[in-house]
Image 1 (spheres, rainbow, N blue to C red):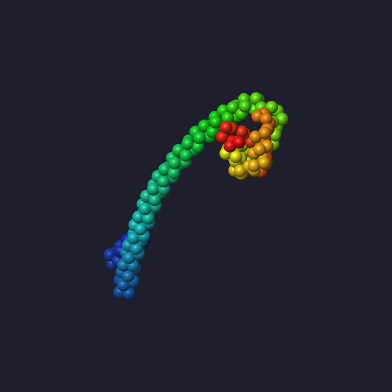
Image 2 (image 1 turned 120 degrees about the horizontal axis):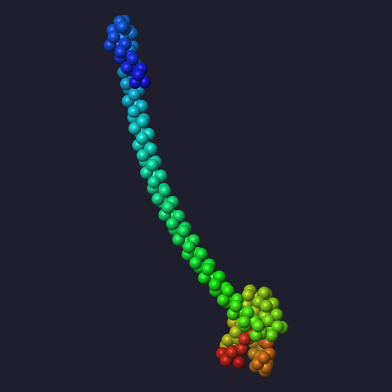
Amino acid sequence: MRQRAARDQKRLDSGAVSSPKDLENLQHEIVSLAKRQGDLEDVVLEVMERRESAQERVAELTDRVASVQSKIDDATARRDAALEEIDGEVASVTKEREVVAASVPADLLKLYDKLRGQQGGIGAAKLYARTCQGCRQELAITELNEIRRAAPDTVVRCENCRRILVRTPESGL
Ligand SMILES: [Zn+2]
């Protein structure tokens, strides 16, 4: 466009165009080309500004991504450490259970495992102050009397939830 304006200007300056009508047209075209050039320069400027602001936004978002990633890394590391700790605890509790299970008679262990499966993972409960700590129900007098009469090695169970009841000095018997 600049070339065209320069060519028009050259023709105008050379005096080759003599007709007033042509001269007028040529001048008009030069003015209009100059205006168009100005408009285009504005557009270029605007595009450059937009490009700059887009670059700033990209930099800002890149920073945020890095910050979120660092939080993810941190949380992942903490999760892994917690999992390791839990695994260690599971291993140690499993070992403890094996030791205890080995000292329990086979039929009692079988009953306990069956009840544990039926009662949400708790097969035996403490009898505390005449109350089964498994189902939180207070035992009936007759039931308590039966338990009182039972030999210490007799397996007693909760009438309500059927869990094995563990008697202690705090059982309220
Ligand atoms: Zn119970």
